[in-house]
Amino acid sequence: MDTFAVLGGDLRSTYLSGLLAEDGYRVIAAGFDNADLPGCVTGCTDPKHATVPADCVILPLPVTVDGVSLNAPFSRHTVPLDDILRSLRPDQFVVGGQLSAPLKAKFAEKGITVRDYFDREELKIQNAVPTAEGAIQLAMEELPVTLDGCECLVTGYGRISRVLTARLIALGAHVTVAARRCQSLAWAGVAGCTAIPLERLHDAGDFDVIFNTVPALLFDERYLAAMPKRTLLIDLASRPGGVDFAAAAAHGVKTIWALSLPGRVAPKTAGGILKNAILNLWREREEGT
Image 1 (cartoon, rainbow, N blue to C red):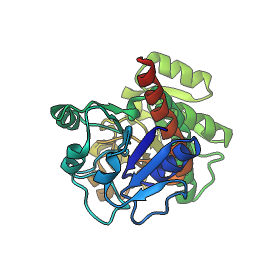
Image 2 (cartoon, rainbow, N blue to C red):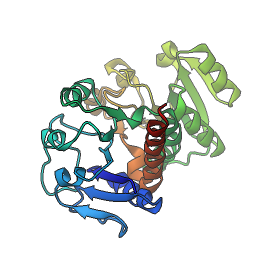
Image 3 (tube, rainbow, N blue to C red):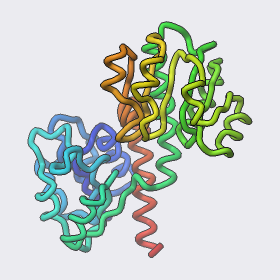
């Protein structure tokens, strides 16, 4: 029986542990002192001890927030990454989410090969659904009007935007998409959106809610100064985001930086998505692909 060690992470990781155990794997989870683990999962207080019997070690998404310690919000103690590194063996299969280049280098120095499951295309596609649903949930909670008839702007037209715009249109919203690529604008138009080039963003008009998916500064001091105060700005982009948050606060623009929405709004679904991506990596390793 293959043994998986799940070290740290948020609610996604607790569900991931249980789903792996339901699939017949032996699962040891550590770093969850203040969380309830499924009964089929063996809990361990010290993450370093969990790695010893493991064939596969699963690090969280993201692996670290500060670059020094394991991302383990449910642990009572800080877990230094160096302690985890010292506990790993070169023969183990190690995976983690959102691995930075310096962090990969630290693993390489120890002779450990680590794979980033967040790079998997199937994970990014499937994650678009809970992200879009979570963004719509935020908008419904914060707006004083219904999304039906609402003027919405979506910047970018990648995986998340495509899912999000389809759901907004289904709810009766009027959706404008601002994107760089001509083919993205064409697809947005075919989907029923008003499509404009991103360079015309400042002339796009006024909106009730804006959903940004572009991880580059689009909403700067100039844009925010001219934005109506009633506009809700939801930033779905990964770090560094696409909004000057200090300028937004100065101009009274309500802004929400909605990072890691899948783990917040649908942790069980998100845990299942993680499981599928990790097992795909595991099987590909066994098959030598």
